[in-house]
Image 1 (cartoon, rainbow, N blue to C red):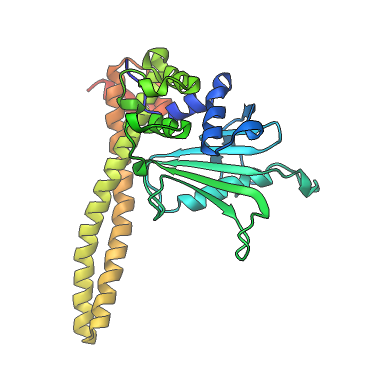
Image 2: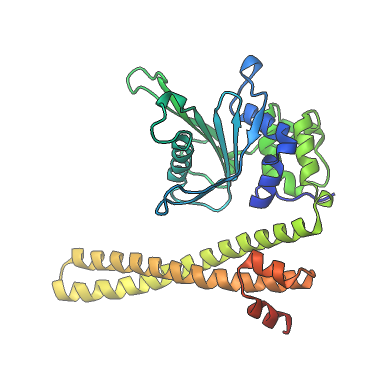
Length: 325
């Protein structure tokens, strides 16, 4: 048996963002937020993950999973594979947008309900060695949580190192599922005692996906891989070009000023400028190349030209040219 990667954007939404299988999301939320007894979430309504902006100049938001419970608490669950330098600001933006979106101008502020953000990251962003962290608004002197409308939780998958035989809590089992399900060929025995995780494996089983769903999944997997490789190559080339440009700039300024400060400043500016220009150019060229390579592979699988144009953004003329090669 083969399973899709839950960390993939497409697979994550299919597993955790389906109202038909909302028990999966409820179990995950209760585990991450350490809710038990009467405090446990009993029901949620999974919302459309697309938040259209109310003003044209506002940034639009696409969330992995967004849900609300009977008390009006909003839950945002975001899966992020590619490392982002400002993911913490992204979490703040998503949460604040969901918060203000609860009321219209002129409505009473008491109608605003709590927003809880959960970010699952395939990279590390905090200095702590703990794989899960919770961030609240606290009084700096008393450490009391008197403003409770925002809460941020982060799961850093690289910091989770427990083996299958070491799993004890439901949270650990969920994190193990997210990190290792793609490599599994059966449902691990240690995870079978949690029905919602078994259900998640069932949804993730490739034989339960339509061919169309698998084609789209494969496309996004290849696109994400191609984008990461293109970005890594661009950054490497940019650093090399930046170092060379910076060295030359530094030498020139050093000759003109005769001061070490000028040489170092020129070198650093050249490096930064070269890296920035190189990354942008490399990202654009790399993504375009990745799209063509992905299109070639999908054509071999029999996907229609119309569908291929929709998922890749390439023109019908470009796709037809590929099919003739």
